[in-house]
Image (cartoon, rainbow, N blue to C red; front, side, top):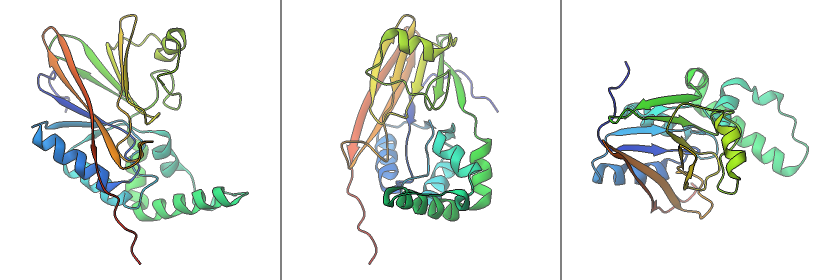
Length: 224
């Protein structure tokens, strides 16, 4: 069932990458801020040690998710088909196989069924579009170093007013023509290490307030 136009604060996360510790600290912060509607813009499970637990946490909270490239890969690529040619690729292939085994067929199918885009109407008549990469291509990033012309090509004349995305792991905001671009960074794989980004958008009749922040966390020690 579609939500009514958003009138209260909405949280946006992205690039959780199977990091349950990082997700939990963000969720605790959102609870402190009394934010109840949560959205996640893809790349949810691959990369961390607790992919199934991350999925279960998202589902238990009713988080609305879109699909990123790593989610698509988990849903469609047979780990046995990977042919690594060096040590780094072998490490990545093992991690992929371990994640795929951990989540199982049912979660993989649910990942496959996730949309690549999700639209959220706001009380002032405007609209948010959540994607992983860009409206033109979920695998093409809206990064902070692109020119206005490059960004407009990736926006692909989308009718939304606010574009919420992830993929780059680097949060930023930028106005380009009539668009407001909000990259929400990464919960589970921030380049700074051991911090988790989140964004809260609060709709108003005269626009929307955008809060971008982060919380720190300590990585859990590996089991011996």
